[in-house]
Length: 309
Ligand code: ASP
Image (cartoon, protein in one colour):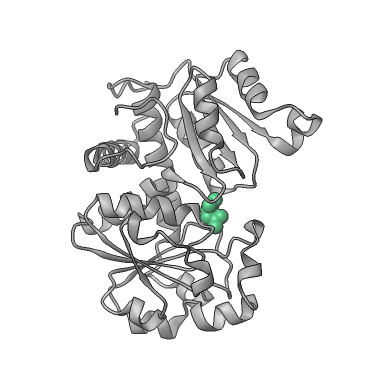
């Protein structure tokens, strides 16, 4: 990979993405055979999280530790951030204390790019405001690629709060780079301008959006980014856009359903769909670990698969 940090996938080519996917597949295979790694031995991977997280945080910690690294997690609410320390001062402190890589989640779009300019170590964006969530997109691409062999010619329909979703933006980039056609659909107030320029086709009608799609990718309404103000009510959103068994049947028996989590059952997805074998939510979480391990390996660990005996 050309770049030291991962802020967004904008500058990533198809080959860059495939490099991570191939690495992840190989690491997953070796882990399943009981192999343990040491390519991150002696490294310190520090997470600085300024927003809530379950999956991304645990997944990065697990990945770093599987590679043999030490990890530290700093949560803004319980750190000196609560005493008024600036972002740049905080991350410089973390590097001074030994961080060899920083994984940053922040409510402000652009925070990881700012940090990457001020620290001499790789910075990985674990979600910045409504801007980007590149490792989510990589793990989603991996999940489809592993299952279907390729994304070439696939139609993926992303449904929901496109306006405030960093996942939508990163996933449009990753999926289109890998040869998929991406549709976005949702209430008009949650479809911002400029989606076509990103390579997506816009649909304002759910039935039309579902026609002929291979994958349905559901998004949560980003209440923390004031999305609720763009909707009459969540109940109405659920009625018109919620993905339930009836709509799953309309999409067809082969359609795969993805969700980055956390899912709000009864809002964007019904309990029945979430439990159906077509929903890959758990596989996405499991794959997140190996994809992040592959990424840390590429950014920090050199090229060998040094194993722990
Ligand atoms: N976990 C994802 C994110 O952090 C999706 C979501 O929260 O809705 O963006």
